[in-house]
Amino acid sequence: MKMLVIFEKSKRIRHVGHLDLMRTMQRALRRSGLPVAFSNGFNPHMLLNFAAPLSVGTSGRREIMEVPLSKEISEADFKSALSAALPSDLPCIAVRAVDDKHPAPMSMLRAAAYSIEFYENARPLIDAIPRLLARDTIMVMRKTKSGEKLCDIRPMIYDLCAVDDTHISCTLSICESATCKPELLMDALYAEAGLAERSYCLYTRMQMYGENMVPLELL
Image (cartoon, rainbow, N blue to C red):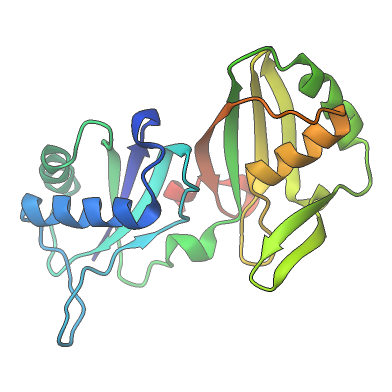
């Protein structure tokens, strides 16, 4: 038995890195007394799996963690125990029990929706959105393990629109073969708008999706 945990990484802790987030979850699970499964060997550790790590500085509304269990427990009891052990800025939103053979969330992940909030008027960027989407190719410089290389992110942009004068919404590909981080999209949008100076903005991952844009937590 495994439990899918849907949790929020709030704005206040957006600068907490993924490794620290994992440690926080491990400590909370230990405090909760839940029957979490551990690995075998000389250094047993919790077998936690996350759908996709968040970049430092990005918050998340419906993040997903998979927790293998050593014995069965009800969803209500699991959520109650974990919620009591988590800090207020890292709340457990929902849980879902799945079979041990259920695919790992990361293997089913295909896309993610983001909200990008600016702390000043973003009208030049908003005006550049139709021009950017009209392009057949959108070339940006991506950092890789072997260095920097140009990458076409146009096929990885599923949706991009303005919410209001200070918010942009986008849905981007996020999988092993094609991942576009919102920072790369903003590089292209700033270039299209002809802006050299970057404004401070807040990235929030709102939802993750599997095949056919079904919310990952429902698959």
